[in-house]
Each structure stands twice: as C-alpha cells, then as structure tokens.
Length: 411
Image 1 (tube, rainbow, N blue to C red):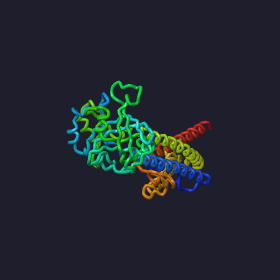
Image 2 (cartoon, helix red, strand yellow; image 1 turned 180 degrees about the vertical axis):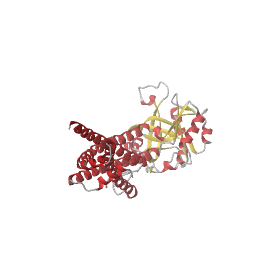
Image 3 (cartoon, helix red, strand yellow; image 1 turned 90 degrees about the vertical axis):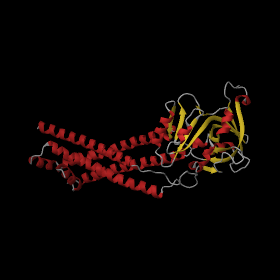
Image 4 (cartoon, helix red, strand yellow; image 1 turned 135 degrees about the horizontal axis):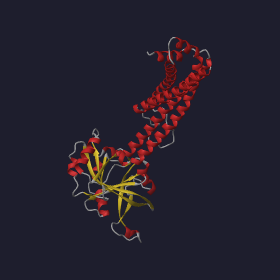
C-alpha cells in the first residue's frame, strides 16, 4: 500500500483528538451513502418502468418496419417480399395499411386509426398475449372478416367483445378530390363485427383498430399497395443483423426502423426524464460532499503536528497534499460503497419478491413496482462519486495548503 493511502486509511479509522471530527466524518459518509442509495434506486425504478412500457408497446410493434422514403405507399407488385421471407431469422413479412378513421357504434363515435393487417397476424404468439376479450380473430372459416379493437376504442364506443352482435362502422377518407359537403361523399364506410379486444399501452388502446388487409385495401381503393411492410423475427434472432440484411435487399428507396426507432419520441422522453433525475440527485450528492470538505478541513488542522513531523522526516508538500486527498477520497468511496451496496440489495429484493406494491383497488398492469438493475448504472454512479469526491478533496486540500504557505511566508 502506498504511503499516502496508508496514512489516510489510518486517519480514517483512528480516533481523533476532537470527537467532533469523528462525528462530522461519519455524517459525511452517511450523506454520500444516502445520495448513492437514492441514485441507484431511482435509476433502477426508471429502468423498470421503461421495461414495462416497452414490453406493452412492443407487443403490437413489429421488430422491423419498412416504409417508402418518398410517397405514402409501397407498391407490392415490385417489392421484394419473397427475398425478405428468405432472410434467416425472419418469421413473418406482413404488408400493412394504416389510415386515420372515424368509428361509430351504439350511437357513439370516436376518431382513431384503422390498421389493415394480413391474416398472418392471427398466428403471432406475442399478439395473442395482449387479448383481453375474445381471441385474436380477423376472419373465420367462412371468410367472414372481423375487427380487433383497442380497449380504449371499445370503451369509448361501448363495445363488448363477448357480445356476438357487437358491430363497428368504419369511415375512411375517399381518395382524390372528394366532396367535403357530406359524410357520404367524403368517406367510404363499411361495417365489421368486433370479435376481440386488445390492451397494450394507453395511446394505442385509445386509437387503434385492427382489420383485415384485403378489406381495408378495398375500402381505400388501394391496388396492390401498402403503407408499410412489417417484419416479425424469431425469438432468438439478431435484429441488428437482420436489419442490415433487409437494407441490402430493399435498397435506398426504403427506410427500416427497429422498435425503438418506431417509437423514438416515447423513448427519448423516458430517457430524458431518467437523466434529469440523475442530474438532480447528483447535485444533492455534491451538496453532501460539503460535509466532506468540513471534515477534511478540520482533520488537516487536527493533524498539523503530524504533518510537521512528516516534513521533518523529509516529506514535501506534495506528499502531505496526497495524504489528505486520499483521506477525502476514502470518505467518498466508503460512503458510496455502503449506499450502492444497500441500494443494490433493495433493488434485487424488489426484483425477486416485489414487496413494494402499488396498492389495492386499482387495475394495474403489474402488481409490484417494477425495477431493473443495470451494471452500467452502478458503474456510472460509482464514477460520479469518485469524480465528486476527488474534486472536492483536491479543491479543499489545495486551498488549505495555499493558505498555510501564505501564512508561513507572512511570518
């Protein structure tokens, strides 16, 4: 062990001549412990919320979505659907149409989006998991078409998926220069029976209704065209690798977005909130280091005789400075380690047992408060503690040494 660190360690553990210094030192350690504990718990809570929201959103979000760079539609007659299906790791390649729509049912109406999807949607397991009323059904053996409504849309329209006669009328804009004077002349409309309801994330639930691709294509007068082409990959597929292969197949005329890119705004908001809280708690941690400054200043005064003895033995000002810098850093590291350890234990217990509940009487997506521990957050917090502790110790010791040098010169 290096001499400055050895002496600093002895100073940390040894009893001081004034008990107040010991008290302030442990208050400093406690303050940094609380700050680091709060950082790891809060960041883990944000990670847990992000994971839950992502899982909810990603149930209906394809792994990859292809759109045209120019124009609103993709011409399926010239698009490389067959080549995309041959890419390893791709399970489903499904053309889709998305359009704003007006829904009417039970003398109620609601504005949202209608999405035409291929019948392959009925086979995707993760989509079946979000059904809260009925089964994922877009057609039957007699080739009758059905709608799958978001839970919010169903609530606004008073639709019960278990009612065998639940119907919804869908209005979509006519192509071309349609008359704006009447609903009949401006929109195409048709009726579908609602056989099932899905529930994922609130925004999707309140605006989206899934319908068969062919039905909507005819309503919109699309001839072999789609708004997007969606790809669903195998569970263990490397989405990044698949995305590169898809880009190589379709060329520069189309964009390919993964799940995060499709919901870029949502992820930006969640991450911005997380890092805003990180900055706020870091400022609190900086305030906690003021106790370290006080403790270190008092310790330097208390150990003035020791430093004079060290100087008489040949120690220079640089060695003395390093001793007290190590002392300040040790206080920060010990406090940070204790806080991180307690925070990690609490987060892991919450992950495993979920003892912090949301409460009773509410319809929650999860029963316990979601948390997720990430190694990069632990490393970031520890690095923050080192930077804050090292900076505060350096500034305190340098100021004290300069003040002492100036006093000696004056004498």
